[in-house]
Image (cartoon, rainbow, N blue to C red; front, side):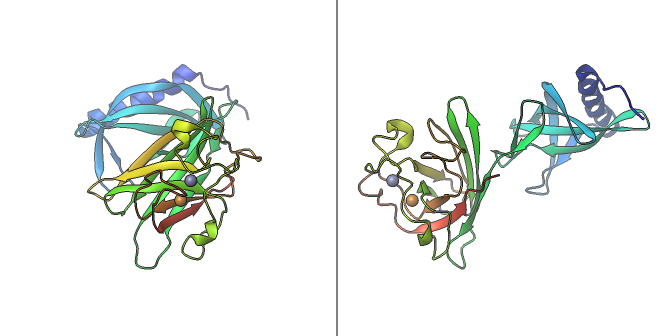
Length: 260
Ligand code: CU
Ligand code: ZN
């Protein structure tokens, strides 16, 4: 049996109706934040233009605002067709800890991004985190979140090898395809910094830090500037951009950059 595809406007309206029905029934639109288990009261800002289909589901996303904190969240809605009725089947926070997990491809299909999972290099440490990589017209967009680290700046680099064993030492030196001195690749480019010199991630008093950078020239493709199969290292101390590697001390967390 075949059904006519619903129009994008119709899908967007299903989402708006779902939210306003919840508001009518419960006095607010509420989702559970999977990271904390907390209930968050959200308000619709807008439904994105883009709608698509993946498997049996249609989907679109929305910009939502947390009523209490004013934080903006990107929420995904899956819509399923059952007995000729379109219904919201699932809702997810698209950006988990500020880390995008996928983008939309040419035919509106979801494309997963490679995400490096940061793990402690030493027993007893609770440091954790995620780093995602996204190709953009301006370069490779890198989003990171680190949790349970001590406050302050920590050197943050792509190292040459995708191996976190031996307390992170198996990751080798900074990713340095041009054999140039250490620096800040975002500011100074490949001729005056290692391609993996992402500078520092700043950790707050709550042990959490985030980073977002776009590095022109880095890529997820294979080749000289390809980062897949390498690793991300978080250091004990700040990178002061001194030679030869920024005086950032030991390696406290490491994650291999997967192909997807
Ligand atoms: Cu490093
Ligand atoms: Zn370096």
